[in-house]
Image 1 (tube, chains in turn cyan, orange):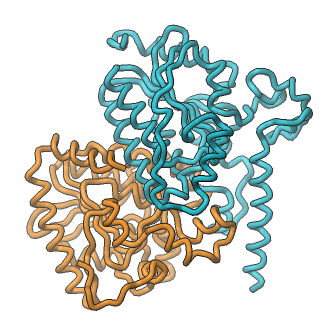
Image 2 (cartoon, chains in turn green, orange; image 1 turned 45 degrees about the horizontal axis):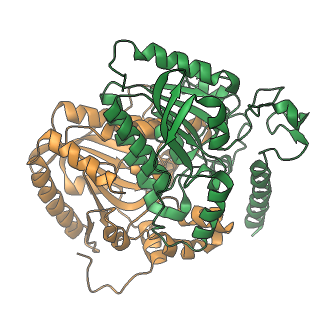
Image 3 (spheres, chains in turn red, green; image 1 turned 90 degrees about the vertical axis):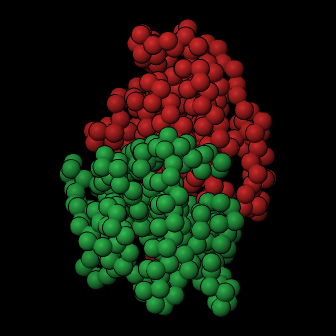
Length: 285
Length: 262
C-alpha cells in the first residue's frame, strides 16, 4: 500500500512537470528557458525563438519554422483526415483544437521546398499538434513525402519533434513506423540523401523509426532525444536517471547524432549539405 | 480457428492469459517446433542480450533461422532478460542473424513475447531507438521470407521490430498493442488502474487485430503443448510454401504493400 502511494505521488509530480513542459512555448513578456532556467525579455529570443544564454530552441510550430527555413514551399496532402480507427472518445474534439492551434491537418507539415536553389522534399513535425504524436495521417504524409521524393529524385529533410506514437489511434499508429521505414528504405536504395534534424522533443516511436534512419542526423542544441520516457525508466529500474541522459549532446557522445547545429545556422548548413550531395547525381527534378 | 468451445474472453482476460506464468518459454517453443536448434550468440559489436535468443535450426528438414524473445523461467533468468525486454544489443543480434539468413537464403521465423524494448539507462545510452529503427529499415527489404508469431505479449516498437516481415500470426491468448494497457491508461486518463478498460478500447486481441488485417491469422491454443506445436508447424509449413513461390522481388513488394495499407 505504501509503495502504491509513493508511486502515485511520483506520478503526480511528473504530470505537473509535463504540464510545465507544455507551457514552454513563450507567451508572456518574461520567458524562462526550460533548460538553463535563465529569464529573458521575450523579444530577446528573436526571430528564431532561441535562448540567448544556452542556444536551446524553444518549441515552435511547423509554420513558424517554415517562415525562416525555406525560400519557397508548396504544401502537400493538407486535407487528409484520420478515420479515427478506434473511435476513441473525445479524440475528434482534440484534433479540431490541434488543427486550429497549428493550422495543420495533422502533426506534420509536408511539401516540396527550395532552400537556396536546392530542391528538396521537406517535412516538419509540429510539437503543438497533440505533442507531435504520430498518428495514421502523420505516417501517411511522411510516407507520401518519401514516395514523391523517390519519384522526383530529390533529397528529403525531416525536422522531427514528437512524443511518440499517438495513443488514440492504437496499433495503427505503431504500424506507421514500419510503413514509413520502408518508404525511407526505397528512397535510400535510389541513392538519395535523407537528413533528419532532431528538435525538442524527439522520442518514442519516432526515435525508433525515421528520426534515426537519416544518412545524416543533425540536432538542435539541448534537444531531448530518447526512446523511453524518463518516468518509465525510473519506474522500471527503480533508479534515478541523470537529468542529462537524453540531451542531444550526450546522445552525440554515444554516437547516435552526427552534429549539433544552432537553429540560426540550420538553413545554411542544410543548403551546404544539399549542394554537396547534388554533384554527380541527376537530382535536378 | 479459435477453439469454439471456449466462451468469449474479454480483452482483459486475454491480457492476463498473454502474461500468464504458464506461457511456454522461448526454448520450449523452439524445441517443440524445430529440430537441431543451435543457438548463436552476440551482436558482434558489444554484447549478447539474453532477452533475444537466436540461432539456426531445421524445420521439416529445411534450414531456417529462428529468433525469439525470451522472458525466462527462473527468477535469475528473468532478471537477466529484464522479463523479456530486449536491450539494443538484442535487436542488433537479431538483425545480424536475419542478414546471415539472407546471405544463405534461409527463411526467418520470429517468436515474439515481450512487453516492449527495455526502458533503461544503458538501453538509452546504447541507442534503443536506433537499434529498433535499423531493424525496421533493413527487414523491409530482406530477400528471404520473415514470418512472425506473437505468442504472449506484443508490446510496442520492441515487438514490431521483430514482427515487420511477411506474415504475422498470433496465439489465441496473446496481445499486440501500441503500449501496455497500463501505460495507455496512464497517458490518456492519468490513471493506470483503468487498464482493463484500456485493454477493451485498444483492440489488442487477436480477433480484433485479424479483423483489421494487422495480423494474418490466429493459432489455436490448448493445454496440450504438443497440440500447439502441431498447429504452429502446420501454419508455418503452409506459409513457407506460399512465400517460397515468390521471387525475392515479389516477396519484398508484397511485404511493403502489407504495411503500406495502414
